[in-house]
Image (cartoon, rainbow, N blue to C red):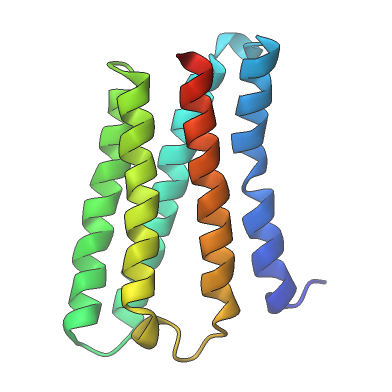
Length: 150
């Protein structure tokens, strides 16, 4: 069984597989089950952004009542709405959907850095480094998917 220190990075990097799969499907021109890879990419992206948003909610509840805790709880709701909007924008303009979702990822990471003193007081700081690396890869894949559909 994995220790928590190995489990979290493993799950984080495994979470990149659906993003990478959608990119590879786009490059190959395949559409499994009749679903466009771009639709799969946006759907998964919105889901992961909502997951990260829920994590902010949980952290906001976990820490003592403070400006940071209220900011995290309010932000978590805003980012969940951004994920939902990004999902809906897919049917209107794929590039706008990618941009909105990408901005959500960047802003969540920024918020985590801004509140890291409170968020990670009982956690190893390597987690924030992991989050930065994963976010960089996710944003790069968003940009590449945008390039592929142009």
